[in-house]
Length: 500
Ligand SMILES: Cc1ncc(COP(=O)(O)O)c(C=O)c1O
View 1 (cartoon, protein in one colour):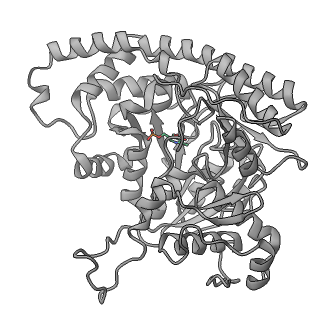
View 2 (view 1 turned 90 degrees about the vertical axis):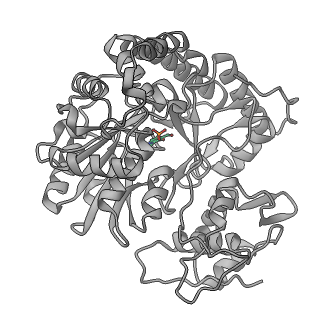
View 3 (view 1 turned 45 degrees about the vertical axis):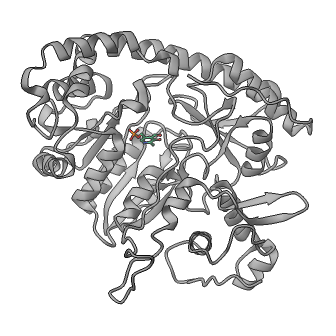
């Protein structure tokens, strides 16, 4: 079977990226139906004039993202069980043209976006899904007390419109916290309260991104950011990362409007952007007239040494926007975060926020403001930092005990680490599938909410494991099961899924 894919060898997009994108569209557009076998990698490589390795990496990614399934002795075919995110994205497959006709009573939706994976697709007994805070550590008693206290003094605050930028007390508390924790000196007016960093990203995109705007990102990077910029029709520019973070030397010399980075704990690889590169990045942005979007999603958890000053703390030119979130430090269900912008952008950011939703709910902001001001936040952070460092140590110890001298990255901070698989191991998606049969969730980059443009050094041979929401028993049992799976032992009996 010939697959209708055309490659543009002059394009800036890698061949791998082109094949992946066109394959995905054929599946979502219904031209490749569930159950259809795909050609052998060698045959497709020959048809396209690409290397077999390129096709194999594309197949790996399509499997990891749930578009294809591989079965021993049967081969690889289009998934019957397309993930929800694919189905959502499958409705609008093309931008409507003026001559577009009505289909089943309604016009096709012009929106082209797809959403990041925010929860593991399956509920597993031992799920190393990334970025989940410990469910038992949510400060529920304090929260209840602070809600009651805020309600008792709410007055007209629940009935009136308020400043769309956010509650002044919370903005002040955040500005103060950022000074002490991240070396960022800002006034409360520069802080816009958002529904998590995802809304912060939307504010940034509304401010800067139009059709064709160049947005550089790390490769690989966080899906939530890449998909978001993509949905605003940005042109994404992948920039490689290595142990010292984003390779600043490989940024384009001009034309880029935004560069999105995760300097504290590169998502998904866990690298820390070195001080030298931080300074170079700021210098590059100043010279090119670009803005840096600094996503500091899990910087509260630093286990070795002291944290490097945030880019925004180092910036003297007003070219950094900073995204903060309480999703990792307290809980994603709160939907609370903030965007900090240079002074010159404060008014425009507040206007965009007003247009989007007229401001974040008052009660949530009042409670969070008091939680920080009363010192409860600092105590909470201290406690869970200690807990997560123990869980991280346990995970590292178990990996070493079962698999020897494992190559890991991202140990210094954060809530997950990356395991670089040696050549003689199965690929990341094969290992993910083996573990899945044992009731264990570990994730290849594409399945772990990472956007992998392909062609990066880590594609296909890295699995990511979150450790913050699993207790030590679960960590030990989960890793034991992976070792059993690799040793070819039969699947352990299914265990009940943990519920909270
Ligand atoms: C890199 C990165 N940024 C941001 C977020 C959090 O987003 P939000 O604050 O919208 O919950 C995540 C969550 O997984 C993430 O991995």
